[in-house]
Length: 109
Image (tube, rainbow, N blue to C red):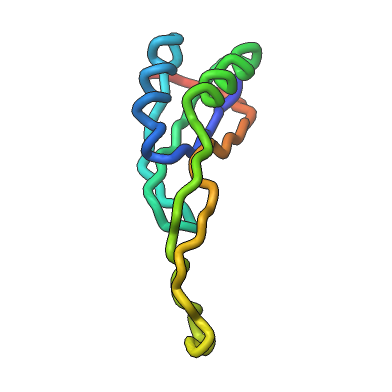
């Protein structure tokens, strides 16, 4: 058995949750915050059998897309602000960061 932890952008969480339920997978959703953009994310915890991991990956890939977004960088901390010009920059956001963790034991009560 494996525990799949997928960190996805909030914009993709509803679509992913629906696709997982439709495919028969149970998942626990946790609110989380990204470190780089300090934006809301959703972390899914999905327990599944070893032979179903690739199917879960497929569902995540189909429902979590990378997109470009304009962000204004935060001012430098402790540095000089004389050369700091807060122009928006385009960065890629979204997609999914997915971790697979072996599960030694699972109990459901």
